[in-house]
Image (cartoon, rainbow, N blue to C red; front, side, top):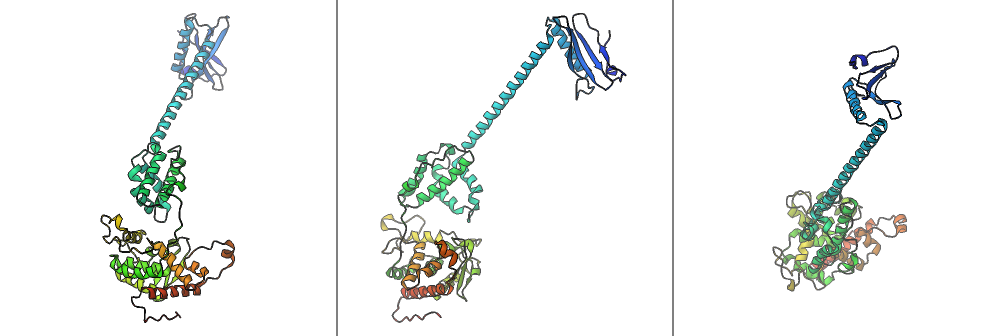
Length: 456
């Protein structure tokens, strides 16, 4: 019985030849055609219902099975078709094409099923991501956004750990609703702080919008909360200490249980009109007590511009008090391990702890002298000292334009900012000296025999 061999399939005939395997009648024939150009194809030959011979291609020959069919594989395929033919299927081509179409359809259906499963898995992953807790979201936000702030996000972290995360930290981000947000702000209002709720709301809004941008949630739960409705309308502070209050403060401060450096900070802020954060972040390399100058570098100033302060004799005395305490530290106000400046809220907290009304009582582990720095005009802050200093300057006859320069305010009028380039260095120096002289009089226990000489 004739069978096709690999040797025959590998032959190089001078003309096209057919190789045919023997098979019983009615079973179809397994065949191969070999051409001189190297083409080697397998066929299954059968007779259809019309009596016509049909050569149904099986595939190309490849002894390795890499780019075609081995002889064994081709013979097995021919055997399958032969059995179909013997079962009575005479239109074999149509039947095979239908089977191929069914296989393609099944394959497409399987691919569609796999794609649906993948989409469902991704949706589940997204859902699980949305179940991220608010504490986890905060850490993500801190690592991406807050780290770029001047303090690396330290102050925002402090506020969140104190006022937000205790309420929302363990909640899933997707579960946070408007009511949860107002629960945080209402707790702040209940403590009697009116500006902080607005600031916390603003920060929470930044964090939740960060989550929306990354598809962690669909909607920002703070979106429908109007900032104006949280804590009422913002009121611009205008607290200025009177001369009598400055005299009273000079008597109260030494008995208030303050650190010497904090007491000095009060008078430096008042006599230089600086921001308290600028003072607490100052380095001794920028303070020249011999020349009487203090450079506030651009990275420490609010408007990003360097500011040169002329120190009056009054200011120099206060800086010297600080220097005696901080010793060789590079920072004027170092932190406990001398690795950097002290927290910018330190002085504000110390002053606030000593301005509590009697009905508020004392705070646990805080100052026992809770009313030591209360003044008739009400609560005052380090920033009010800055405003008071500028007000004293103008009362002494300093031009408002000069006082604004001493505050290191950016000129709001674009034309003036562009074309008026006078530095006012001499006028500013004179303003600071006049302010220092006035503070000398106000804070001196006995000013009956004090004579203030105009600074040369």
